[in-house]
Length: 312
Image (cartoon, rainbow, N blue to C red):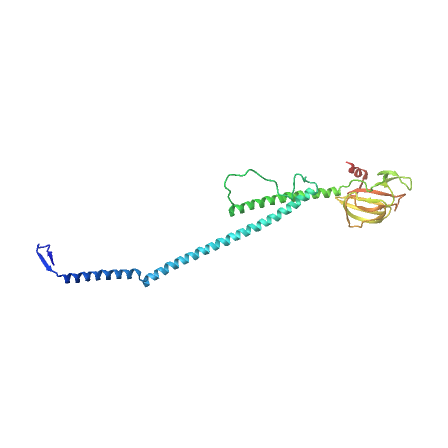
C-alpha cells in the first residue's frame, strides 16, 4: 500500500509504502486514542466539584437562607401589627357597645316615663333597615377604612350622649320642679272652714288677720304634703299646736298646723302626696282641722290660689 504526499511549494511528490500490519497497528492506535479521550471526558463530566466551586455554592445557599429568614421576620412583623390592630379595633368596638347599651337604657327610661312613644322607638330591638340586593361585587373593608368608620361612629355616639344627657337633665329638672310645684289641698277629704285674710277671731270675736286657710275634716285623717320638699320643723309651736313646716326651695314654704300627730322629722325629704301628719285640734283650735299656710320669701300668700292650681 502506497501513500503519495504532494508538496505545495515545489509541486513535488513523495510516496510512502505501508504494509497491512502497519495499517492495522495505526488503526489500533487511533481507536485507543479515541476511547481514552471519551473516558477522560466522561470522568470530567461526572467528577465532584472542586473546592472553589463548592465554596461558591455554599455562599449562594447562605445568601438565599438569609433572604428567606429576612422575609419570615417581615411576615412575623406584619402579622403582629395586624393582630395589634385587630385587638385595638376589638377593644374600641367593645367600648362603643357598652356606650350604646347605656344610651339604650336611657332611651328605655324615656319610654317608661312616657317621654317618647314606645310605638315609635323600641330600644330592645335593632333598628329596621333594608334595601334591594345589589348586583355589584361585594368588597370587604380595609383596616384603615374600618378604623375611620369606628371613629365616625364614636363621634356620633358622643354627640348623642351629650344630647340625651341634656334631655335627661331637663326632664329630671322638670319632674323635680313638678314635684316642688305647690298645688292642691293638704287633705284628701274635708271642706274650707275659714278663708285667708281678715276675719272675726273665733275666740275674741274681734277683727283679726288670718295668715292661712282652715280645712275642717275628720279627726285622725291624713294630712299630705302639697309638694316635695325638706321638713324644716316638726313639733309643737305656740298657737299652732303640733306643726309641720316644709321648705320647697326658692323661698317657698308651707305649714300644716293643729295636727293630732306628726309623721315626719326635721331634715326629712318628703314627696308630693306623702302623709306628714294626722288631722287634729291641738293648739289654738275650736275643732279638728288643719291650718294651711303658704309663705313666699317670708311673706304669707293666699293658699287658695295654690289649691286652685290643681284643677288647671
